[in-house]
Image (cartoon, rainbow, N blue to C red; front, side, top):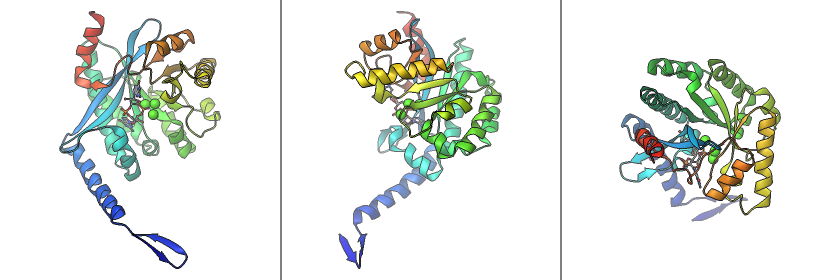
Length: 278
Ligand code: C2E
Ligand code: CA
Ligand code: CA
Ligand code: CA
């Protein structure tokens, strides 16, 4: 029900009450999800175009909720961001990713593991040191990792972001600009930040065989990246036509459902063996 109080319009509805209630319960559930080991590390392969071999994976989190089933990040990451719980979640992902990396190395498999870092994490200037500790404990090299950061996360507080990113870079961790082209940002940051990869957003890639504008944007981004000495990755590759277009445009790497969906991290080694034995 809506009530008019003077000139202001106050909304008073049971839906709003129940949704803030739901948020509260989601918040406590998310806290315990980490403690109760309900989060799952999934990975999606990244393919080098041309040679067609897997050169890396992107870590993507899932929440195996006891009653709601498998939740995808869009259902809880934005919320984790708002509440700051993302810092715990990122710590968890970094730990599990280091675990995975150690496992791969034990099998003599050398892939770069990419992890998504959010706005809040960039404000956490201790994170680079904590990450270094995690890697030392797992005996894996910092150069095995790439951190993916969106333009909007950087632009939220460019000065502090730069400090955190410089620390990661000084440690030897690679940095990637995620969802490139979608954020409101200035290209000037590309000059200042120690970035080594651009990731073209899937919204430009998914339908590029049918859309002239998308093709122009993708090609221009590949050229911009290469002219700046960066590696360029396309995400959201859903068919062979797009894969061929990207190859002919000189794109370095591709990721998408045409190559493979995200799979549970513990299935990666078997999946890789399968790829190369057929
Ligand atoms: P993102 O970083 O842009 O990750 C790529 C998303 O595109 C993933 O969705 C992936 O499953 C999906 N995708 C991959 N290939 C295709 C394709 O061919 N077609 C289509 N339509 N989609 C494809 P996912 O796993 O649902 O993750 C969504 C977003 O949630 C991610 O977008 C990222 O921003 C965030 N996220 C995921 N895991 C984490 C995490 O561990 N930490 C943080 N901070 N954010 C995460
Ligand atoms: Ca990403
Ligand atoms: Ca992306
Ligand atoms: Ca995205």
